[in-house]
Image 1 (cartoon, rainbow, N blue to C red):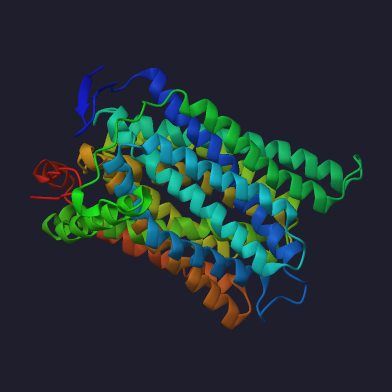
Image 2 (cartoon, helix red, strand yellow; image 1 turned 90 degrees about the horizontal axis):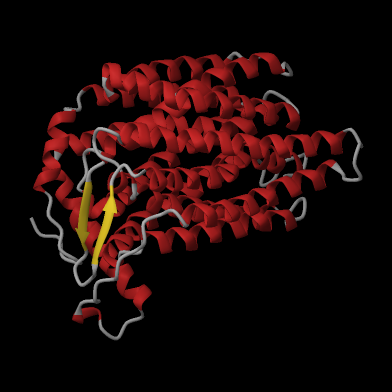
Length: 460
């Protein structure tokens, strides 16, 4: 283990030990906590929305699948606007853990609130779900910001993979419980309607999220003492001052990215291929229910397959990256994603087995591309501004995640079929993979030594 000390300006000396097993386990357990929400969103919330919230004849002249894709794109746009500010606020105020707690509880609370949204209340559902998404993604900015702090360059791939692996298992276990409840209700074994069992399953994801967040945060490093707010922001509420500081740092850092072309090129590549993966994750449940006419139970089974295979996939690609390096491992992963997008177009309607087979392959590659992208990025950024840079990572992630669902929604609305929309996703993987081949990883890693941060000021 490599101990190191981080001095926060205006703060006490905070001692953090890298590669500490207890800290890493606690960090990874937050992925376990929030993955119940992430998995439930695709496996249960999406088909619940298209099948129960949206009327049978559609809403606003669109199918439920098209509306869901526009919802995902709209939520990504909202997050695009606020994520870098939140990351910079966390770095300046030395309060990543506090911010993580606030946004995790916010997201979990609005997840629970979905239980009360009546059928047919499409606008209300959209509002509640978007707030839950804001909580989920904002908390992840602060969570991801710990990665380069608690791990070294030699272990960061394995630590990142461990977080995703525990997340897949935790999310899978929760959805398995929900699946049992829904099946029992559907077969009238218990005194619940299918609609009520589905609502309970969604609300329960919020409860799971809160309880395991409390457990995980007990093992996180403690926050430091906030830096004093500069005099030019004196007299303003702390939230406003930190928001202005965060915005100023974000703009300056964003402008300086032009001086680091390899890091910028990696972000651009990530934007494209992440758009593809996020579209598949967010649209697949609605696509299965609305286009393939599969039942809620069949959709959940497919997501369970994804979750439990993704556990092994995350570790497998961690091992593969050690043999061929992370960049090549991601490129290999993206080739498989192209095949998946094309295969999804040809899935037969009303047949679950082919959908399950495709889900198994998705599970294998999903864990790898997410874990390796996060950890590779973590080796390219300066530790002292980790949350801010993961804010950038998140904002580019959310900016890219607008276009895939938006394209899917437009194509689906224009053609009346989600099949034409799903095959268009292949283009994002192809473009992202090509750009990634142009990234010089060694140069990107070396360039992080040229960054320098002091409080609210960002000076070269």
